[in-house]
Amino acid sequence: MKKKSEIDNKAIGQRIREEREKLELSREKFAEIIGLSDYYVGQLERGERQMSLRVLFKIARCLHVSLDYLIFGKTVHDTYQVQDARNTYKAVEDNKYKEINILLDKCSPEELELVKKLIKTILPYTGKN
Image (cartoon, rainbow, N blue to C red):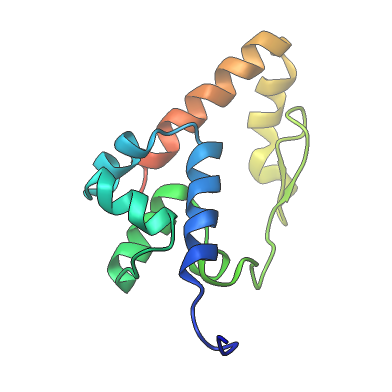
């Protein structure tokens, strides 16, 4: 029986797979972005291998999730509240996203889907790998 303080590699792997799929990244493309083999990423996603902190950090940055989410399945601080596409993100500073919200309000549902796909394509490349 596992102690509570032990890391659950299967749960971490499942969260990695779920977040990767949310970004619509194939395992091969994800592995290429973070500089690992797709075979190794598959082992990580199945919980068969334990990764170094450096690899865990690269994965978290690429997927735009926190380390505490990957490791524990929850975040300590929820900064953003995800809402529908018309409201995008509601942050502490509402004016920070005002321009984005104005632009999105002008979009048709089809255009919003295109914007969503573009963001999903770009996000994995914004981290330093």
